Length: 241
Image 1 (cartoon, rainbow, N blue to C red):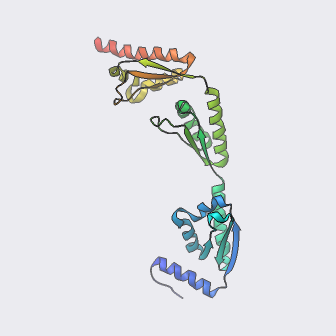
Image 2: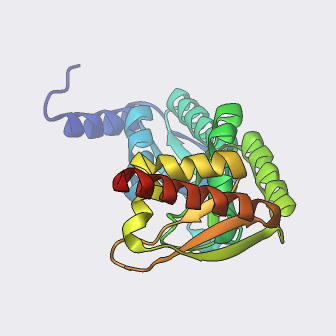
Image 3: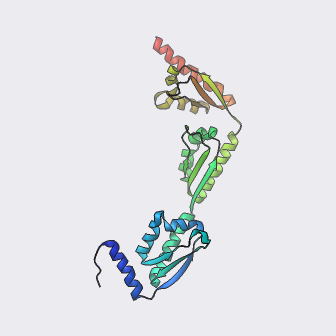
């Protein structure tokens, strides 16, 4: 028997034909309620694809029913195939991890500069920090479940070690001299951080403020300020000579 027509119509006809020719069976697979959304997919796309590829009908209970049972109906072999596919989707999501951490944005520059790349390289996790301009506390960690837990512990411990040790010192430097501290593509700021572990925040042009923020451990602030003045004086001497 040959069925011709548009692909979606052919699939529908196949499903209907199998249901009429083979005696349908019904099977329930228990998937925790929180994971049902991964079986359904965006706007039901995953569910629809599963039904088309396995020639079955799938019924997911509504969220307010508190039921874990997903019902599958169709030919026996197709139902078993569909069950296997649903379990594979569940276990894939089960092994994924996601953590949302609340750490004061004051500490984010050190996490960004000292931990993000290292944790990605060692644990293959993705760490997202808000851009500095937002000044929000949320940090998210994504990846496989166990590595995410390890990354979370490392970040929390890192924050604990820094907590209470960071101070902010405002430093008045004329706006036209900020570029000497910034350096080409931020090279000056990077050099200060690498040598002193101090973060220097320079206001953007729209702010038009002479106040730069020097942030770090108390014992390192003075060293960073000395570097800043040396950078400025070096360029001023060169321009006057």
